[in-house]
Length: 284
Image (cartoon, rainbow, N blue to C red):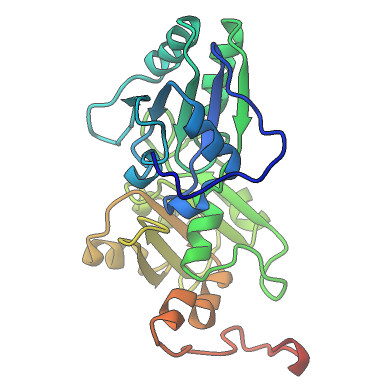
């Protein structure tokens, strides 16, 4: 366990035997972990973690803590959700202090609600520890704000697949397209052709900016800037693989000036005013 970080004085919650903390680990960068999550890592007897949890995060756990992998990957053998939930029940009933560590935020397309529901149905006490969702934190690391007052007053988060692994049939793409200026799509690479076609058919312009961010906030992060009309071909040419976040909307243009990681590496902004609207000098 890493001892270089110490908590300030004050009352911190105790992970008691028989409890389960459903905890968000953030989008990848260990530095985006919350203090409550770190506190849980240092107390847990058992850590049940997802595939998107970076190994460096687990280094903060107690050395004697049991680590149980419960990751899911589309198209690959994975534990069933019901088995994961019941395993948490079993561990808690054995008197373990259980930390369920999930990528991003457990309540944002993370199945945390399902797991919490099962635990409570079995009289297991739970604590919910939110995390930074990839749809916000991952795009921020790419230099893309999900809201910008010159671009959008709304943003919609949708999933690219449902329980069956297919594009959600319950989504009204026309209503979503017309009702939100910026769309953030989780787990959308596999069904990008279907999603792009649905948005184009719903009236989104073919030249609308799109960004695809893979391995967000990690050293392997990649960003593809494209348009809705060329998304499918550009994705195929890039050979990018999930996990990924897709952002559709003019806020993607802000990456031309807000690619802060590129700036830190010595690159110059491509366009100081990508929206072409200008801001007052005192706000520049």
